[in-house]
Image 1 (tube, chains in turn green, brown):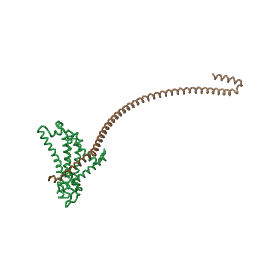
Image 2: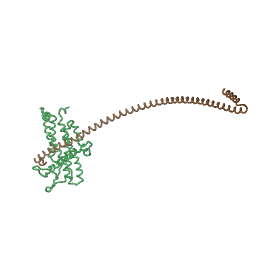
Image 3: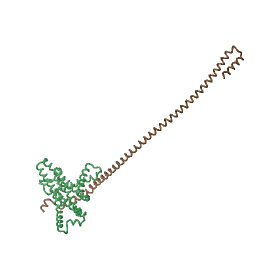
Image 4: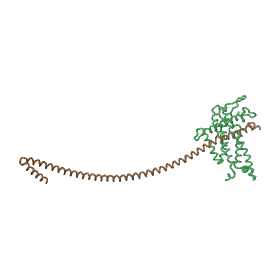
Length: 241
Length: 165
């Protein structure tokens, strides 16, 4: 049975360190290694690895440019970082060797690694960063007056709509975090159940499918952030034109 | 609250994850995206520069080809002119040479004729002299038995005078 909460492996003070936290550390190490490699070895004529990284980055940059235009420079780092972090978190949670290692506790073996996206703490934190960054970017781009004007109006109808939008902004955090958590967690449950039925035949295709789903979910999170940032940094005047 | 506990929500872990992501965001932005965008920019500039240089080179090549054609055309016309002049000059030279040769030949012929005539005259004179001497000698021999020395001398003298005439 797969629990909704990640397993606590040990404690540092009063904080329980879960296998999802270890996965976060693993993702951090992978991202830092990737960054270090590119920083040290980037060249005008790229090698195989640099080409792949450039392809991903240029694809996302192109998409952001299409949606956000001149605000791409501000929005792109968030979009790309969300994608890289989430996709690596999803993929590491599917790696058989990593997820196969564990600590024996009683009759159960607790896996050392569990996809960070199957921890609501992580998805919630990512959603908070996304929404807070979106709103702070909106304030910096439009100014506080126009930003408040989005939600507050003297017209009762617009005031009502504005208040609804305000509620919607908080709901986005919930929707963001549960969408990612739900999709990846379901995949984990499916894989767990399939592993109980067969060792290779059923889990392997599901694992490949989950790799795809992990990529898609990361892209959805990144693109929704991109869309919200683009919308909230566009003034009503510009929208009217 | 029970639901939150079921999901294992921990405010400290959420805060830690927020800080963690912000650190990742900073590092990726500073050390991954920035150098790569710099490379993209450099590459773009290099491509632009290469295209400009290629265009310039193409234009220079076209210009050089046009100049080359013009030069070839000019050289051909010059060569034709030179050939024409050379032909004319050769005709002049040949006619001048022919004329000079003719003059030289005429001069040589006239000189030869002159020389031949002088030689002939000299030979005739020598022959006359020789014939006179022979005649005198023959006369002396034939008179030797008939006339005295004095008579012989007078006859010979008369004969010589007649021969001289």
